[in-house]
Length: 137
Image (cartoon, rainbow, N blue to C red; front, side):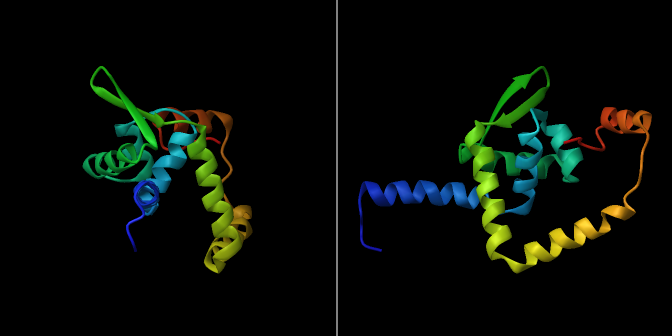
């Protein structure tokens, strides 16, 4: 590609954001952060990743400007940088829904299987939320 000066530099930064979105684990982390602030420990639990792996994914997301973090005692608390990240995730999902046939198969399969989902009481739901094993949307 011919050198386009500032335009190329901007495209390179856009590419860094796209690379940060280019891993399913990072998308899962962003989805959890879209629900609210989370510590690295909790994100590791929610995603089933190791603490070290979660930290590496978050490092990539912070470098792309998608996630901000702060120390709170011994914990690192993460959040989305702003609502534009949610809009970006929504656009990605919409594009995937419209243009990737496999997405439609997975989504329709999921909704067909919803009838076989486990029913839980409020007490059980609250307990699982406190344990951090589920996230309620």
